[in-house]
Length: 128
Image (cartoon, rainbow, N blue to C red; front, side, top):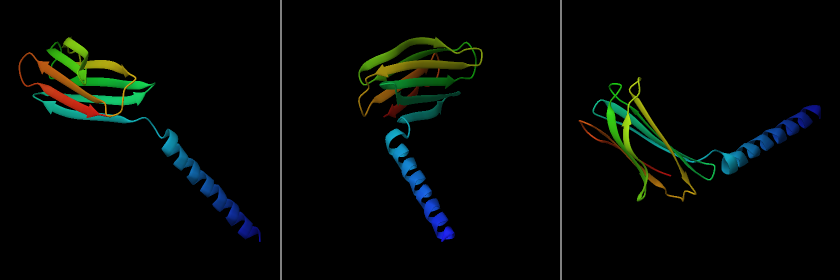
């Protein structure tokens, strides 16, 4: 009898844990996120986006061949330009751009273009 009761209690606890985990996955299992990685010329890039705080956090990272390189950067959401201008790679040959899209709708598309002074442009896209 004790063995049966112990097994029933253990099964009940296991069921509660499984149901709780399932609810967490459906309700609060994490924010939607997407990223696009690639390379062009001697550079690699990552465009990432994550839904949080009522909008979308956007990050654009470039790892280039040398520090002090000048790049033209454009980050757009639909027809709206979020960031545009010249950026220079830091002492580690990196370039970072951050932006936030408030009140972002579903099916949000972000496009980033990074153009060096010489060489091929890098283009990245993500959709949330």
